[in-house]
Amino acid sequence: MDFIQRQNYLSAIERYVDKGLILVLVGQRRVGKSCLLAQLRDLKQADPHNHIIYVDKEKREFDFIRTYQDLNDYIESHYRQGKKNYILIDEVQDIVEFERSVRNYYNEADTQVVITGSNAHILSSELSTIIGGRYKEIYVQSLSYAEFMELHGLNDNDDTLSLFVNYGGMPGLARMGLDEDIAREYLKDIYHTVLLKDVVMRNQIRNVTFLENLVSFLADNTGKLISANSISNYMKAQGIKITPSAIIHYLRCLAQAYIIRPVQRFDIHGKRLFDNNEKYYFEDHGIRNALAGSNRSGDIEKVLENIVFQHLNRLGYSVTVGQLQAGEIDFVCTKPGGLRRYVQVAYIIADELTRKREFGNLRAIKDDYPKYVISMSPLVTRNDDNGITHLGLRRFLLNGLE
Image (tube, rainbow, N blue to C red; front, side, top):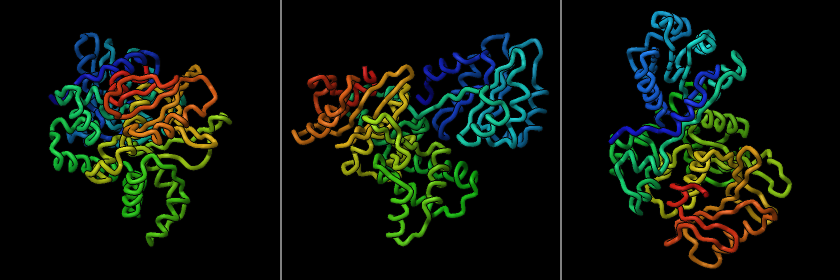
């Protein structure tokens, strides 16, 4: 099987159809945005009242559409009066001044514009400038554990979870297979494509060697507090001179291409965000693993943190790192309306020292919001530990925090 219907994203799209908004599917290349757009096309084509105008900038047949004038001409020649026109454009940032064309059609009667893109800065800055707030971003991530099982035709067991932990959720792995050498080579190829197209070329970066070294550093330090100054000092010790301001620029470019996601620190007692020292997680932990090497025994905690962070985002939480006077909480998770959850991540709670560290930090929080420890401890599914919920990783990935 190499195709699944990602109903949660299709439902999110449907919620905003006919609301006078441009719908923008954003996320790293190869996470499945094109497939979602094709699924939407096929669903809408089934209704004879609809007409589809479909542009896929990753296909050679659309190479001639290079500027907004080309796009206008193409849409005009295919537009059908008396029908509901769905204008679907894949990888729209590859069209120069695309926003000028999109503006012409998004508020037309009986017209819905849906676009995809792989660069956060290009999309947000250009659309905001032209049409203000009249667009809705739908963030598309790589496959969840449940989707990974469905796509690969696997059952929920320890072996399947191990495959997911190692290789992540890039949909193209279904065609390549889960052979270790082939899978890791494929994941590295995706990374290099994204780095070249959406970081180096888009931002005209010249110091590509340092950029690659920076990503390797982030892979080795996933889930650790990092500042531009600390990276600069580390690189200086390796004989590489680079300023903190240059590092900030590179980090921003990597985040805009959806390779990494920065996570701010939140002062739990002071109820405020800190302005410096962030953590960085990868959009897909399989790509992170491919860059960091094949041995998970030494970095399993980092990988699990990355997996839990990704899934908390899928569940709709806004995630920060919790800061206490005497320690740290891996994740502070909030939703609109003031709903908050605290989450610690551990590999295995194997001894009393580990238990005190993971559960003790949560007990130091003096409020009544729900608190969780997520681990791969054997036989743990969902247990209560004096008011703190201990969740097994598989249970969390399939059922969330509830």
